[in-house]
Image (cartoon, rainbow, N blue to C red; front, top):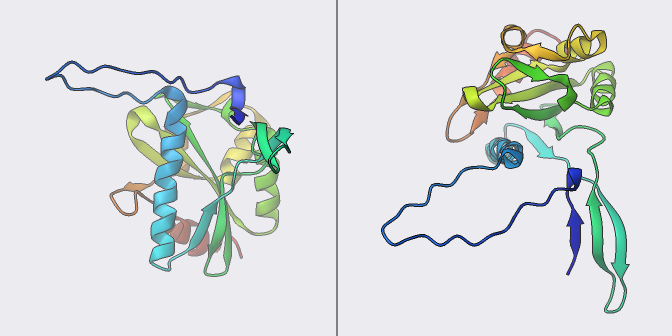
Length: 204
């Protein structure tokens, strides 16, 4: 059986639950899965944009480091590690404009910890901006049920100057844009991209 090692050495626990007759089962999302749920909803939004011919934005696959391969019955990976993403989660194009962004989630109600952003992602987005690409973060404030599109240049400046180890919610709210939530698309962030980056000539 193939074995995959998840980031941080953690694996989702698997257990059987017996439900008494007449009882309802209330499921809670494990903290480690909330970011995955957020990404799934962004993927749904991107699928909608593709379906409507509005934009082509896709998720980069998480790189895998192969450790063991079984050649007994043809090449088969038996052990591998998910590596840390060296760039960002998403990239694509909108009417000739390159788009590159990272999706993050936090359970805090007051601040977003900069420790959630690895240096290589900051460096990657700096290169995107240098090439006049559109770069930003989608920040999910899970407990507030709010998602903000935050321009990467603001977060990069905050990250580089290190005035503190986290960005206060009120400050991010001031410099970001509240994303409209709905059914399809789940997070309609494209109008913000058009208004902030293109109508204001941010990439020209």
